[in-house]
Amino acid sequence: MFRVHETILVEMTDEVSSHKTRLTVNDMLAVKLPDNPLFLRGLSLEIKIPKSVTEYRDAVAFSIYTDMQPEPSQNTIDYSGNKLHLDTFPGKLSYNLQIPLIHNHGLKETPYSALLPYIVDIAEGYVYFRLQLVMKGTPVSVLEAVFDIEVKPIIIDKGLLDLSMQYPDPAASQKIPAVKAGEAEPAVPDTPVLEKKDYTVFIDEKQAQLNNGKILLSSGIHHIAVVSEFYRSEVRTVKVEQGYVSKVQIQLHDNDPLLYVSIPKSVSLFFNDIQLIDFEKPYKITEGEHVLKFMLDDYEIVKVIQAFKGRNYTASLLFDVIIREE
Image (cartoon, rainbow, N blue to C red; front, top):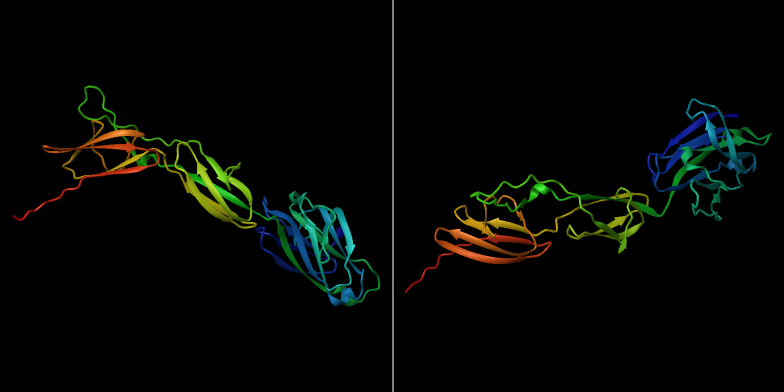
């Protein structure tokens, strides 16, 4: 159990922004971590040490705590918790402390930064950093010294790809009407129903295992390919930035051939001997050979098309007038 002079709260609303604050001796800094962080692997505390403190080396110590009670607030000064680490500042004007938050964090101590030899569980939600006087007989200048601290997130060198698929709108096309035996008019086609069919996602030519459309990728340029037996292949290039979510939406298109019709109202069109009337939307046709017959009064034109998957076909009728001068 211990008492502080003041609790300084810093709330991280994202995983990339840094925050500056100031502490005096016997204050505690409570850093609230983002909710459900994806990229955070540690915190970096860049501390500017007052000159008066450097002149009395080992006079001021810092502590890292876990399992703190109660939850920190600006009006709370009494706490209880587990002291994870205690150390004093070196005789320098600056000090950088790296605090790991996950296992396999990959952080290393360098000549310019110290590494906390313990891991603060990211699930705790807070990182607690306390300053305290540990030497008697220090002057008032040490007690009143102000420490400038910048809290910086340390993130993994990855970003999140959030991939969403837009399925084809079944109402955007229509089926060739079926003619029942004995009926003069074509039967009304069924109401279109959205069908979600299978597809496979490849990222950088490797099959990707996505979790609800999401996957962590190294920062940089990546190539996405969507392959399916039922949809047309889609290819995209996306830039994934470190610590950010890259949202990509891909519109899927049916692999069935589509027939667009543009003819005058006075012309009758028969598709494999089935009369087509509604030309507002394209017709979804099957792969293979089909016969189109255009009729205008006593005139008749017959065309044969060979339909392939993933292709669109447009049927139009052109009229021309030939004038001869003799």
